[in-house]
Every structure is written in structure tokens, then in C-alpha cells.
Image (cartoon, rainbow, N blue to C red):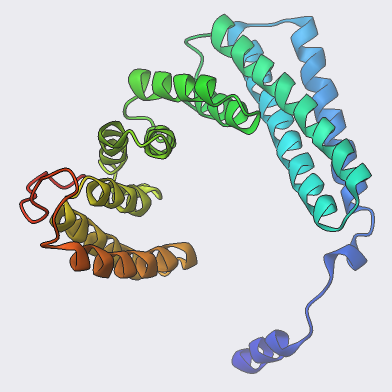
Length: 266
């Protein structure tokens, strides 16, 4: 009987939450404004360092989320051809991010020993990047990895730094960051860090090393069941074949393409 009830429930058409809660968006916005007002009031009234640090962190997080939501709306409106609305939301996103950055900096300057400082550094770096301030963002990410090497935010920060170095063709530095990220095999970024480490080795002409790393990505990602990781496994399998096809070819820098012995990351 239970199985029949479950099957019947599955067979029913899905419900549209916007029909059941037509004013949900307005309710959420009102709650957010209420929370923001309370946090600002707490900061005005003062309190213990721990309370003030927590209020600053929560306000900065709220503003960061608001900026992200406004950016998503702006993109959707631009895709629909509504440039006026898109421009308004871009301005709103920029304003929210600007204050989020200021609040994160205030938190880090006033309360350098507050709990979750590593998290504040990570979201500050993210907000700076979203604002086009990449150099500052990298500096903050480096501070995080230096001060909190065992932080749960450190692997993603290493990848973040690695991406900028990779894009600048600074392969040795990028490889170092990807290897550091791959020292945390439990982290979600682990397969991607291995994948980018493989591409560093590929671009350095170390095709055998690249093949080993691509194979590890395939072995890890195919078993995960995660859609994104399965797609990464497909990419890695294709790139493995590409690396294999380069074996034995002359390296344009005059090095052998088959004598590769650099240690695997992770």
C-alpha cells in the first residue's frame, strides 16, 4: 500500500510554488530588510566585541547575498532585452557589494581575532573579485592561505589563486597552488585541482605526468555521481587522449616530452 501511495504521489503533476505563495518574494524581502535594520541597530548601540563582530559578519553576508541576487536578476533581465531593469540591478549589485567589502574590512580590522575570520577573508576575496578588483582579491586569498592553512576555505582559495596565475601563464606558481588545494582530498575542489594541475603539466610539456593526473580525475569523478564531476571526468578522459597523442613529439623548448618525473599533487 505504501508503495502504491508513493507511486501515486510521484505521478501527480508538480506544484508551482509561485501559485501557492504569490507574495513569497515580498515576504522574503521584508524579512531581509527587518534583519538588516536589526543588525544596523545592534552596531549603533554597541556591545561586546564578540557581539559586534557577529553583527558585522552577518550584515556583510546579507549585503554580499543581496549583491549576488541583484547580479543574477540583472543577467536575466539583460537576456530578456530589458536593459533598463538590468542597469538598475547592476547598480544595486554594485552598491551592495561595495558596502559588503567595507563591512568585511571593518570586521577584519576591528576584530582580527574574531571567530570565522577565515570565512570573512574568503567572502571578502569573492566580493572583491565580483567587483573587478582581482589584485586585491588575490592578496586577501593569499592572506587566508597563509594565516589559516588548515581552514575549510583554504583549498578553494588555493584554486582561486591558481586560476589567476594559470590565466597569466605563470604555470609554476599555478601548479603550486593546485597541488596545495589537492592536499585536501575530502574537499569538493579536489578533482578540479587535480585537473588543472594536469593542464599545468601538459603546458609544461610533461605529458606523462599530465596523463597520470587526468586518469586520477577520471577515477575519482566517475564514482561520485555528481553531475559536474561526471562532466569533469569526460573532459579529463578526452584530455588524457590529447596528452597521449603528444608523447614523443619534440618539445618546442628543446626538452624531451617523455621524461617527466614531477610528483603528483595531493
